[in-house]
Image 1 (cartoon, rainbow, N blue to C red):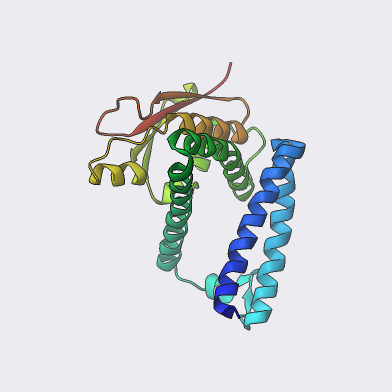
Image 2 (tube, rainbow, N blue to C red):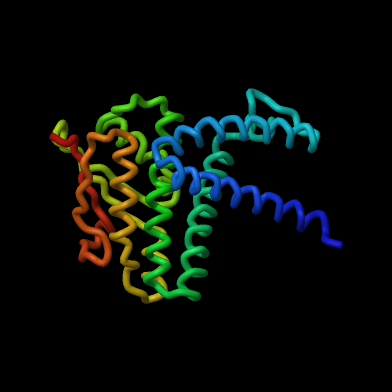
Length: 236
């Protein structure tokens, strides 16, 4: 007989996997734009149902649509929680990459990684766009705001070099993944192919007029001051 604690954790794991599979298959069946619309509706509905049901089952009160313990949490703990959630997200990405790499090699792991980014980056942009209540064509100002709300923004260090109406350059000045490789004496992970998918699709979801240019990203050479750099402008 399985232990209930093990089943509780595995039910959570299966739920996350099933949710992700639904989104991936929706993209395949109806295309990314409609899948993003469907995710917004389904995700909002599911989260409200799940939180209310979990609160009732565990005897936790709700406050302003949230479990009371979260609604009343002080800002310092919320900041720490956001960082932990972001690090856990990155860990999930890393262990999946390693699991595929050990079984099928670097080439297939990178292909899987790049495809995941082609789905996740627009999803993340769409979620941030909804949370910030950005217009459909949010412009460069909208993109700047959105970049500050990414999961990466909680665990990496980044900066923006503004060029006014002409555009702006976004630089990742510290990267958790590359820092870990440096500590192990390893070369930079060659993330340019995934980065091109990631940043281009993110910016295009915020505003389809935005054009993305890779200035440099590993395996490209880069200065010590930053790891990768991307330039954004409104297309002519």
